[in-house]
Length: 480
Image (tube, rainbow, N blue to C red; front, side):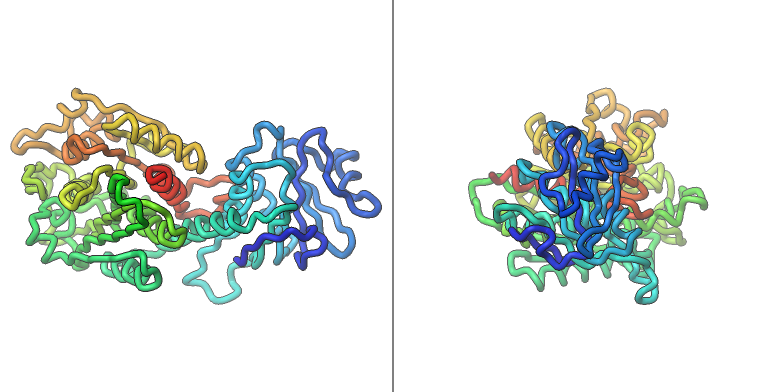
């Protein structure tokens, strides 16, 4: 979708559909000859309350009047929701080019929200469908304001477009997006962006370096594992070096601890965290952001074969920790364990990992919040602030020595299947905490928010791209 900003009045643009927002008791800033918009409000067909939408025609255009709710409550997230609802209606009436009249006296977060909500709601995954088989589609978005807003609009378009690329990656089937294909994709992003440097360790190198936890997950697959490292240096040499660590299990059968067959087709989404990290690194480069950032993505399949890791096997992680693999379906924490250690050894001073890690976090938080667990108050607060700004919500869950005690193994130092099977999201986090140690670290469990978490602006079944906006905002705030 082509996105632009203009100081022209909406009716002076070439848009076939114009969207105007209304706050309660404020009416519309500019009406048309014959006052068709005001008439919609007076009749009650349209209203300023959030979610109300009405359509009228005038001067050869379609006008969509969207209720925005109370002005004092209208923020970036409500702007995304309003934009999503407007796009849904615009698609019903076969709009191709949409112009938002930016409400008066709103901040940059609202401008960004209107752009993001529009691009995210307009998303379609049609990689495997014939051309023209995906229904109505918006081709253009214009934002009309009295002053130059092109910089804010351009930045928001870059971020939303990247989030849609995360969705593309996660929606691709596992036979199309293998670990090697994901590594090639990351290399391609770097070729287009001089600010990025990508290094890929193949499975023999992973094993040679002693990454026994990651290698254990990969044992059952014919597809070789890949460790994808992306470096971005945006200046600010005094800023702490941040590592973004992502789990990218491109397909997860559960290994010999086989998943229920009714849900297994969804396990292509188990690489959503890794996709968010890869595209966050690309977005930071596209924005020319400040900061020193390292993206580390462990990419593998978790499959079944005569070589697959067995329940009860003991493996040795990169830092020398021995792990009882008593549940081969608790593989994500094994992948992240070696990635976190690798990031620490490569100089990371702050670490944020993101993963579709546990069903326990879905039970606790559903699809509204991601779980946040951290060993550092300042970093946790920064993550929560970024979540609030971007609308990618998190809820902090506790770490505690008693949860850490549950992770201790019987025959090895730790186990990936604590018994009894309670506090599943927290014990998984405590296993990761073991590897993070004293390094400031935050863990984002996005199992409930990464796919099939629908909102007004994420309407399609499938991947949501959750985490992209949050991670980009967080890194930029840490470098400020």
